[in-house]
Image 1: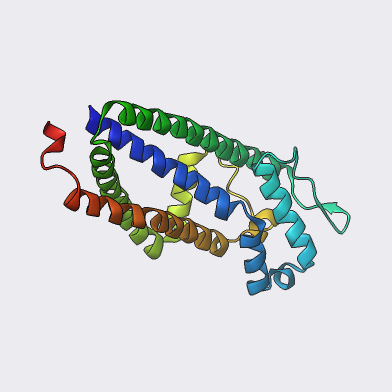
Image 2 (image 1 turned 90 degrees about the vertical axis):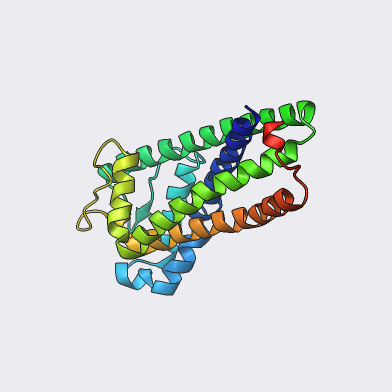
Length: 225
């Protein structure tokens, strides 16, 4: 049972890490503003840099539930149409639900940790072994999706959308959608890569420590005792 609890504990940590990574990278305007400047999107879209910055800030604030709508104007006209507004409702709900899951995972992880501290002197042995096992699963997933990412990102991105959304509002038409023109695939490609790298950076030191602890500190056969 303790091994299962350790496994659940570490999955909870990973889920919290992923959600926090999305918040720290995908929902920060600076990530997008830097790329707008690098690729000179203002010239490509024939809008000012201030317009682009305002649009992405409004979208991200809406997703974070820091504003109630995505109404923003460019040259006196609304930047986003009704289909885009409906899609952003789905995106906001998805992120807010992810935050709720992360909070539940955080509480569950805290409860498991308290249990181990109170009941098990070898708690670090169980937790580090659990982390190694979870990391093995994460590694397989990263390799699989990494190959998919490199070989056909468009297919991967479309699959994620069909998995996460129950409708096809995400299929925006570049001819009528300013949102899809200001957020082309290259932006999401780099965003996904940045989040994956963030996850690896978070995992690596914990994995090294877990391996060290298992080799140097964990009692032999502790899970059977």
